[in-house]
Image 1: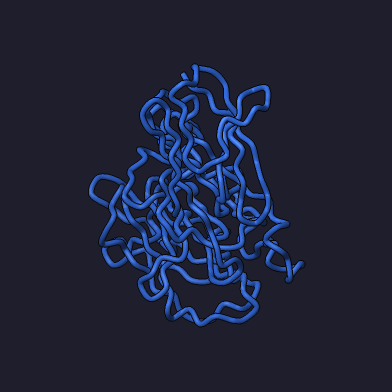
Image 2: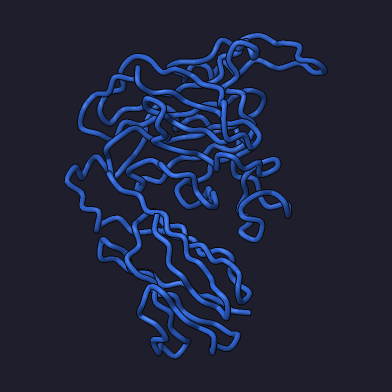
Length: 305
């Protein structure tokens, strides 16, 4: 992760998150948080070789926890370009303190390649409920993160940028009662805990209780096996925006950023450096030119209040 400074009278910091090593290891390709206990994680193998799963685990960091996750040990082999679907296998109603925990739907259960027994006290990895971060780990090292480890977003992570994608302001839920499918342009997992977790950055949302896509995944790693990173469009989020002078702005991107420049609305370059001094700028609208190491560039509007 690299940091650039945008000085707005005081200092505004751009934190840059890049992703490398495309198509090199397993990642989460689908997330299901459905009605009752119909929860599943689909794992995709984007590499050109079969992978022994004995080194891998699925971990659940519950309710903002940053340590001591619930762990599900994977087993068997995942073929090149294939998926493994692991989920909740509870088959009977179970009384839990003050309520009945219901069995999963038969149609959902039939799509699972592996599943927990349904004994919550034995292993509750797949009893996530929208506010839990999930990871894939290899020999204890994180190779993909869904959510943000250590953050309790409330009921779920949402589409509300003003609340940092938590539901503090009542945004639309994205990680509760939803099926999320990884975009085909995503070719590797998130290995560093994000500053903000915007689900829409790498996932498409399907309606609640949609299971028809489990069991297969479309990824740019295959079909165009020699795909260049230059052909994949970078995506990014600028937050917060508008911004007050002296506060922190984050640019979260799926590609490593080379440089950020600032321009006014008539196109005049105010800075072409990684450190931008703006003490004399008035409140108003400015343009961020974001240049990526793969040669691509994007623009974003920044409002200084």
